[in-house]
Length: 244
Image (cartoon, rainbow, N blue to C red; front, side, top):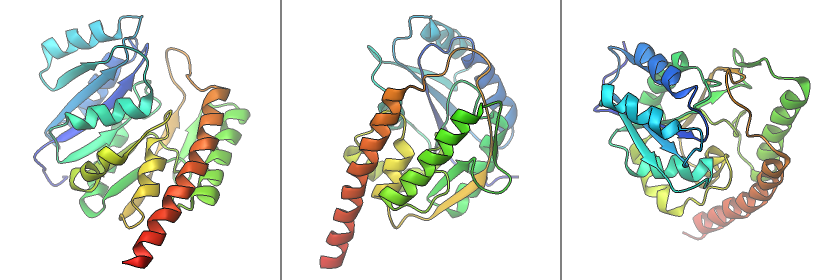
């Protein structure tokens, strides 16, 4: 059994996920039962499909479900950081709402966090993988990971994962410095915490069951620009460390 902590805060950004949020909350309830005291913070960007209304109904039945509704579509990365700012837990976990991140994998990340600052749910380590993706998306995912490692200088095999857990004490001081663009929050955190103890655990990434993917060419271009910006930030951190 996992070591009990005061609370785990699970932050889930949503935009048009009304068909998935109840299934996600049910899955987390089953996966974490008896192991963790937890809350699920759904950060919804004013979804026109009524996602927020579904979350309100869930919250009325389960006090562990909380809704943070934002006025418009402001981006996945900023949704996660906004969720973390109101989180009550000692352990923080971010994951997608579309069930591509399986709730049953959450305990694995949380258990590994007992001896790490950051735990990454990785598609690209032994035991991890991707299910039901076409070759093009698999190629883009593996290429993006390789570009991030090479350009930014991180060593994590899956630095673009959206499924990751953090010690509050490791990430909270960094929140004011984060400027998340698009959906690659983890990459920015890794670039700006070069001395963090990071673990990767294998996950099976499953293509969404309901709804449409939000992956676009615009996201690819944003990612490439982000890599260049983070390379500069990481080099600046290294220079500052050398002068101390």
